[in-house]
Amino acid sequence: MTLHPWHNASSVLRKPSPFRMRWFVCLFAVLLSLSGCTRIDPPEKLGELVVGVREAPALFQQEAAEGQKELEPTGFDHDLVETFAATLGLKVRYVKAADPQSLLQLLRDGKVHFAASLPVSQSAADGGHAEGLRLSPPIRTARQVLVRHNDALGPDGLDELAGRTVEVVAGTPPAASLKAIPEPGRPLVIERSDMDDIALLERVARRSSELAASDEVSFQIATNFFPDLTVAAKLPGELKFAWGFAAKTDPGLLERARGFIEHIGRDGTLARIHDRYFGHIRRVATGDIAKFLERRTTLLPRYRREFVAAQEVTGIDWRLLAALAYQESQWDPLATSPTGVRGMMMLTEDTADYMRVSNRLDAGESIRAGADYLSELIDQLPRGVAEPDRTWLALAAYNLGMGHLNGARHFAIGLKRDPNSWYEMKQVLPLLSRPEYYARLKSGRARGGEAVIMVENVRNYYDVLSRFEPGLKFTLAPAYSSPFKKQ
Image 1: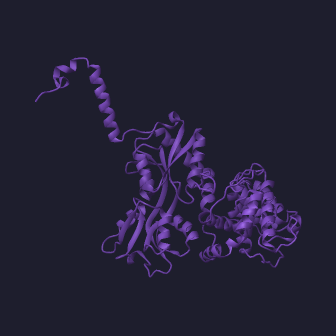
Image 2: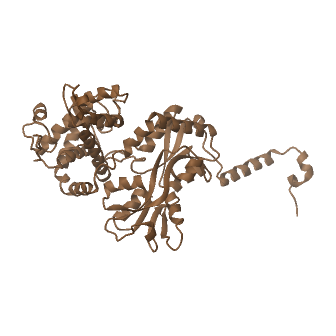
Image 3: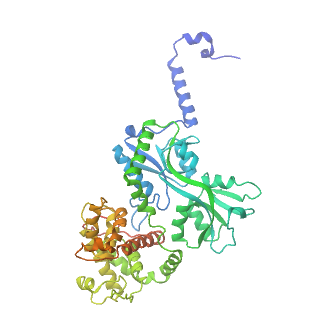
């Protein structure tokens, strides 16, 4: 066998030729490429933080509107990551993944600095690492649940799963929990890598699959869209969600992330972001959601043009206006309450006079006046009130009046709560029905707790309409820029 010169022992003493050096460099580059070792540069060197996210309701969404390519992203993961990036002085670039396995692959391929909201078992979260991963402290938790259709004949517990078929997102802790059920009671587990939890639960609602394993929060979100779902059983163990980092990631970035999450857990920021996206999802009863969905197809089309026309004048998303109208009157233009508020938007006589409404029972007049009134309330709040809290507080004022809302905001300061935060004001508004508080108000007593329920219901209805009804392109440039007052 003929050996190349560099195979001879004496060749190690010779200076490599330029040809040999180029050959080694090319071979090393090929091997490096094949091994998948090429990793993204650190955030400081790259000039941005690159984060893997799952595109799913309430986590990370970019809604496509008519005439627009893309709107700004929103969601729990988006807000949390943006808050972290601000502490680093960096902008964020998001890489979207369909499921947890795809997120893990982004990490393995070195295409992201970390992955957001990775579902991990309680033991992995407590240990701070999973197989091949290093984890942040948990950012939220949820129980694992088994979900069936309301009309299905069982199962009604884990002991009734033999012979059943359960679909689950591939590579998740619920999949592992199902596989851990001992034979012969273990069901047939089908792991899906082509859809997220909400899509799996929709299949159960459509009777396309028998059962789905998911987490409790995803189930609660799904029941706002598909009310024919119920929990058949709770799987053992708690599911935790954390940021996942590759094992060889920069330890400095991981430690900064850990310190950040621990800090926002102590100062309430994490709770406020969680409440923004998940705090309202259990407010509306399943039966009421079913009724709302039915009226969306039978009643809403009659008035959609009026809501869109109101949006064109005020710049407020027509779906938010429709959600408010449903909460007020269930889209009944002739609705009348015992206290004298009337019409689609349930305007008081004073408000109708102020908004120059000649007939409160005319649907178009009522919708336009209600939209104008809400727009004024949004603009009356101090500039320091950020969105979406600004809109939620304005909705509370729509129910209570701005005088009562301002009184509650004043009480919040004395109670060392943030008057600009809807999360904080939800705790303060119910105090307006207590004499030691309303006695100090010029505007008197108010049902602040009812205002909280009203706003949370509107948030739920808006979420549902945002899923099923298209957004529109907006040309109005409102005085105050808001995600609900579209530009």
